Picture (cartoon, protein in one colour):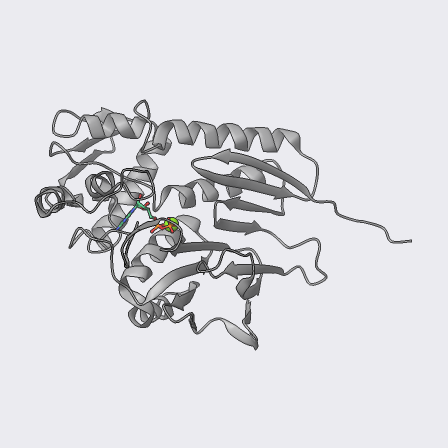
Length: 319
Ligand code: ADP
Ligand code: MG
């Protein structure tokens, strides 16, 4: 007789404009409900599209006054600003005005006029944000400035959820926040404890993997341009916008997956690497400890960093 040692418990919620799923290997309804509540609370705070979110309040008060925020709100925004200062020519959370002007993926999308682009490019400077750690306030100094945490927030949430699972004494599981995947602990369904994580080629609708990575606990974060875009004639306009030109960034990559321990960092690096392209992106990641990347370029070729050991046929091993 076969004894099933571990069952899978999969919970799914539709939230934050995406499908969120949590896979546990033990029944723990309390943990599932707590995480659901947590994500709901985060959506209330950080939604870029809801007028009653905390983020909307900060944006509405740009050029007017500082806004007091909670601990976790301050912590995510401080991280986002710190990374935006470090990588301001690529990853930049002050991109909000351009995101709103282009409306890519939200209907009513169009190519903005040069006037609108120039106007918005004046509002993307992270140095114009004042964070007061004592009063816990956020102030955008110029009217019209807007934070957009779309490229980082899910990473922060994933890291927090890992902490929460540990607090519930859960030592293994999978979190998938619409493509931001994080595994915790060892895989109880495999003999050696490794997980096999598939990376989709976003050019195709099917779920076939372009690469599979066998690894222990890690986060996998992908930025790509094949999911949110619009076309006019043959020209494609996608949703990763350059804070330097105001237009969708041209890159030889169509998607970048970052594999590391910290999901928030992975979110930032996936966007930064998209901007750098496959060659310079690989160079950046090869210099960083404990971070790997898989790029897919315009021709559909895989480019991988040096810590990923190829086992052939798109299968990789990462200790
Ligand atoms: P993906 O949606 O594939 O994960 P990103 O992580 O790069 O891609 O996030 C893209 C989202 O981040 C956009 O929808 C927008 O809200 C915001 N964004 C667009 N351009 C930038 C940028 N240069 N820096 C930071 N955020 C951006
Ligand atoms: Mg991202």
